[in-house]
Image (cartoon, rainbow, N blue to C red; front, top):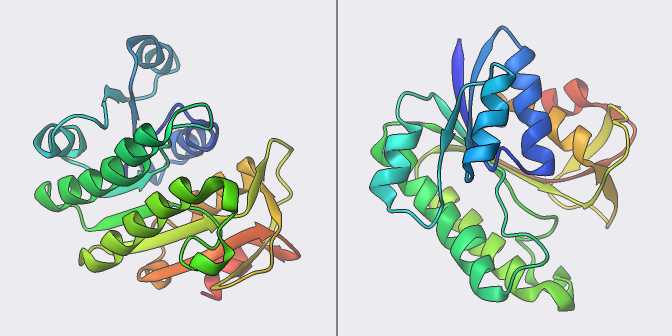
Length: 215
C-alpha cells in the first residue's frame, strides 16, 4: 500500500483527490490542511489528516510528510490573494515541500502546476506572477532528483467529470474539470511510466487510463 500525502487537501482539486485515495484500498492518504476546522471535518470522515502551514520551516514540513511514500502538491494561494502570497505559497511553499520530501526520504512527487507554465511566451498577461511561481517551482522539482510528475491543467471548471482527457507536452488552450484532474493524479501516482514526465492536460477524447499509459 502506498501512503500519499496531499498538500492542499482542502482545495477544490485536493478534496476530490483525497476522497479518491481514501476510497482506494491500494492507497493510504494523509490530508494536509491549514486550519483546525478542516482537520476536524476530515477526522469526522475517517480520513487521516495533519495540520500544515506552508510558511513553516522545511524541517516542520518534512515532519508532516514523514512516513509517506509520495507527495502531491495541490496547494495554491488562491485568486483573491496578493502577489506576495503567490510567491510564499505557489513558489516558496512548493520548493520547501520538495526540499522536505528529500529530507523525509520520499522519492515520489506529483506537482499540480498550470498549463504552459514551462513556456513563457504563452503566459496570460494578467497572471504573470502566478506563472512565474509555477515555472520556477516546476524547474526546482525537475532538478531535485525526485521521481516527479508535473501535471499542467488548463482552465479549471467545476463540472462533472468526463473521464476523457488530452495529455501532451504542449497543447492548445482548453479547459478541464477539477474532478478529471483529481482522477488523473489518482491514477498516475503509482505508475512508473509517469515518472520524469511533465505535460499539459485538458478534457479531450481519450479515456484517462489510456492517456496515462501512453505517456
